[in-house]
Amino acid sequence: MSLSSDWKPFRERRTMSLAEESRPLLGTAPRSLWRTLSQDSPYFIAIADRPIMETGNSKGEAQWTEAARQSSVVTIFAVWNTMMGTSLLAMPWGIERAGLLMGPLLTIFVGALCLYTAYCNLRAHRQFGTASGDVSELTRTLLGPVSEIIAKTFSLIVLMGANIVYWILMTNFLFHSINYLNDMMLDLSVESHTNNSSSSLSGVFCPLKNPVENVTVQSTNLFQQIWNIEMTVPIFLAVLIFPLLNFKSPTFFTKFNSLGTMSVMYLILFVLVKSGMWGVNLSLDPKSFHFSPLIVSSFPATSGMLALSFFIHNIIITIMRSNAEQKNNGRDLTIAYGLVTMTYLLIGAVFYIAFPLEKSCIRDNFLNNFASWDLMTVIARVFLLFQLVTVFPLISFMLRSQTMVAITGNPFPSRLYVLIFNIAIVAICIIFAIFLPKIGTIIRFTGALSGLVHVFTIPCMLRLASLYKNDKISIGSWILYLSIPIFGGVNLLGQFFVTD
Figure 1: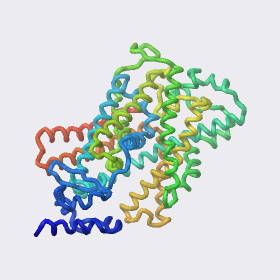
Figure 2 (figure 1 turned 90 degrees about the vertical axis):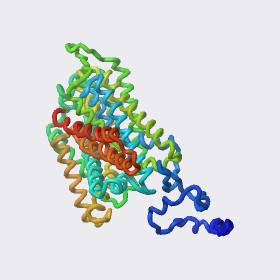
Figure 3 (figure 1 turned 60 degrees about the horizontal axis):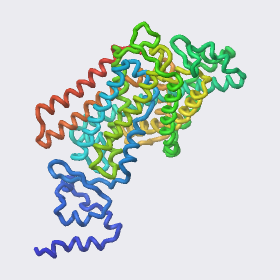
Figure 4 (figure 1 turned 45 degrees about the vertical axis):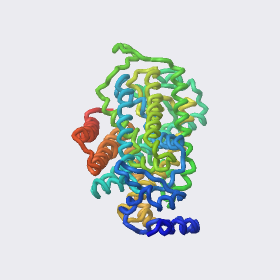
């Protein structure tokens, strides 16, 4: 066959319409045939102008994905913004649980470990993933269908844990916001509260010594009975939230995504302003009021919480797929994790160092260390309440869709199914808000349990499978990638030996 006849199909393809050009090059051919294409093939030139991108592996295999659209800066910000969540409010508590030295060191260590395992997912997908695949599909390909089921199950556990934490926080914010309005209507002055606070510095107090009811205004017994954070408010919240869960599509709530970034910025400002007012309050003297131990035996609570704080592994492939420069994925992911770590340390360590009362007073929601009448705290609670009201339906939608697809194969089988499912979700959240309203406990157990699977085990197993398929596995690889899941198991076990 002559050279001109070899290139004839290419010339004809260049004259095709745009619609014809957009059709799959190999039609319904088996997936393995994609790997027979190389840059030396004339067909590679023919499709060079198509919106696709190549990612190769060590064996020179080519895989095709949709063209990326966003810059590295946008990708870094997307990873940072996705990881920023309710853990921010618990960061000072996490530092207190681990100690002045152990807290920051543990944050850096767990952050670096989570970064590495997230990158393991990206490396495995680069070699064996598909254009629209995710971690679950990759797990099925390399580890088998049982592993895929496990991965999806623990993704649902993370979503359920997030829903419970959000419900507890919304209950808290709603309770204090209504209390503030009640105080305003009764025309009570700020001075009437200061006698109930442990410090006059910006309304900070110790909930261990002054229960929340003693910090807020003592109004009528009827109001206290009706508006009770431990019993009635979680139920009242359902009246507000439940109607928002029954929409077929949560598109409306995605319009408020920017509130997440604004809330993070406000919390950073909040901590910096309060800390600037307090100054440094540290002491290594055990007899000092501001005693700050370097290491505390309850540090497993912090490592469990951090496993969830740095958790993004089940969606990292989806996020990084849109990066314009796929060769920079490792760099961009590292920068994003670095920014997340610095944000956590900024809020956690700075608040801990400046806190003017006993360090043991720091709560798992640091806003609970402030009275209802403190203006900056009021703004934070109202702002966060509105944000969580818009985020909760999104999380519930993802939880509902994934569960319904697994059970019925349809994300919206019927309104009856959806109604029953939403009732169950709200009921579970109310039960936790009434009987276990401790976000620190829920975060650390959820993080340790799901982290064992998604953060410490699946990425390592994917990496080992990749090395095995590439004939590059070694004894060192076995030691490294089996020690990380062991750490995850010890982390989970440690949660049962600490108390909040």
